[in-house]
Image 1 (cartoon, helix red, strand yellow):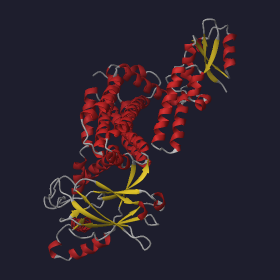
Image 2 (spheres, one colour; image 1 turned 90 degrees about the vertical axis):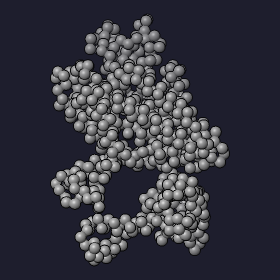
Image 3 (cartoon, helix red, strand yellow; image 1 turned 30 degrees about the horizontal axis):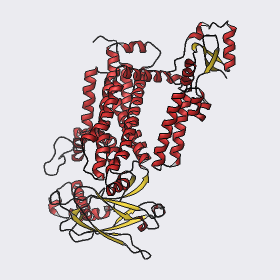
Image 4 (cartoon, one colour; image 1 turned 45 degrees about the vertical axis):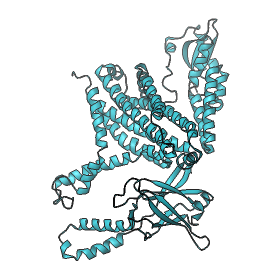
Length: 599
C-alpha cells in the first residue's frame, strides 16, 4: 500500500523522507513523541496543558472515563497533527522541502528520487498543502478547504484578536464592575449567569456578523467567483463557511469557558465559610430536578363536565371552553392550599428503583416556588410544614421552614427516607395566614446529584455551541440571497421573531386571528383563514419553543443538571432541525442563484 512522503534536503544534500497522514506512534506517545522530534517548546507546552486539564478533572472528582477521553483527545490531536510537527522538526534542522512522492516506504521514496538524478519530476514538485487534514474524505476535502479559508480570513481581518479581547474583557471586567452581595447565590449570578450571558451575546452577534459578511462580501467583491470556477459544488462552499465559523466559535467558547471556570474556583475563596459550603453543595454541583407525579384528573373532569351540561345557563356555551374551565378549576384545587390546612394529596416523586442505595447517607434538596393570590410585598414570608417519608419500619421526618413567595427556595432533606421502590413521599401543610399556590409543573421539585460540576459546565458550554451553530446558519441563510447590510437586518429580524413566541402562542390558543370573542377569548366562527393561521403559527411556535427551551445559563447558576440527553436533544433540535432547515434552504438558494448578474 502506497503512502505519500515529503522529501526534504539540507545544504549538504542529505535527504529525509517525512510521511504524511495519521501517525499511530504519535497517537500512542502524545507529547513524548513531540519531544522525540526535538520540538522541545511544543512538547513541554502540550505536556503542561494536558497535566493542567487532568488536574482540574481530578480536583473536581470527575469519573475516570473522562480522564481516558482527555488522553485520547490529546493522542488523536497529536496523531493527526504529526505531519505538521515532522515538517517543523525538519525545517528547524536546516532541511528544505524538495518534492512529494507516493511510495511504499521512506527508503523507496528516496530511491525513486535518486533514480531521476535527484531532480524531482514536474508532477512531484507540487506540494500538497497541509491545511486540509489527511483524514478528510476525498469528496469532502473542498469543504475543509473552504473552512480553512474562512478561518484565515477572520484572522487576516483581526476579527479573532478583537473578539478574543472582548471576551476576556467581559470575563474579567464584568465581575470586577458588578459586585456580589457576599452570598453564594449572588456570587454565582455574577460569575456564572452574567458572564456566560455576556459571552453568549458577544459570540452570537459576532457569529451573525461574520456569517453574513463572509458569504455576502465574497459575492459582492467577486472573490467567490474564483472558488466557483473550481469543481466545487456551491453547497460545499456554504457548508465549509459554516464549519469554519463553528471551529472559531468552539475555540472561543473553550477559551472563555476555561477562564470562567478557573475564576469561579479561585474567587470562591472570598466567600464566608458558610456561604462557601452552600456554593459547593447547592451550585457547584449537577443536580437533576425530579418533578412530582401529576395525578390523572380526566375522570373528575368528565364527571364535572357532565353535571354542568345539564345546567340550562351553560347549554349555549362552547363545550370545549366549558371543559377547559372545569379542568382549570380542578387543577386549581390541587395547586392552592388554604391557610392552616394540608394539601389534599401528597407529593410523590419517583427517583428510580436504585435511588435508596444511591442516595444513602446523602442529603437531597427540595426546591419550592409558590405564589399568593394577594399582594403581600417583597419582604413577606410564610411558614411551611413538611412530613417526609414514613413507614412502619421508619418514622416520618417532620420539619418547619420559612420562605417568601415568587422566588425559588431550597432546603435539605435526608436521603434515607426514600422507599425501597424508589419513591419519595412529601406531605405539605400551609402554616401561614394566607392561601399559597404551588404550580403542578414546577412548584416543587426534588434535586438529586447527577454528575460533577465540571462535567455539567462542559455540557452547558456544548449547548451554547449549539445555539451559535443556529445563529451561524441564520446569517449564512440570509447572505445566500441578500447583500451584507440587508442580510444583517434580516438576521436580526429573524431573532426578533424568535423572541415573539408569546404572540404565536396566543393565536394558537384563541384558534385564529379574525373574529375573536372578547368574552371567551376564542374565535366565534371557524374559517379557512383561521385554520391556516393556527397551522402556520402553531408550527412556528412549536419550533421556537423547542429551540428556546435549551437555556444552560440559568441551570448552571442554580446547580441544575444539564444531562447528556439534554445536550443531545439540543444538538438534534437546534442544529439538526432548525439549523438544518435553514442550511438546506440556504444551500438550495445559493446553488440556484445567478451570482454574476449585474446589480
